[in-house]
Image (tube, rainbow, N blue to C red):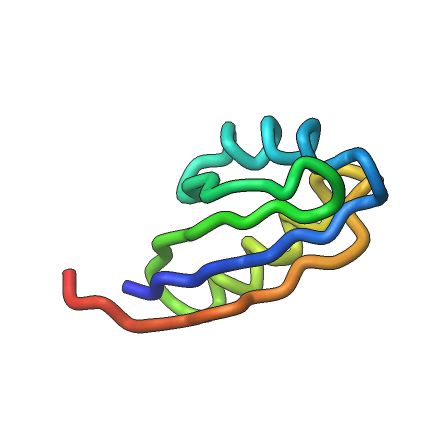
Length: 78
């Protein structure tokens, strides 16, 4: 299982709305937000291909999202 941290950069002032949407996504745990333009979440996925799909899905979630970057990726025993 892959555990990946992601930082989502949004347009200024849009992080709270994006954080609410991210918090509703299956497989993601909302970790926090700076209240302005960054959201941090953690995902637990089976396989690298699913991580790529998640990053794409996050990028398409809201037009206010400018960039989605994985910050840490670790393998965890199930």
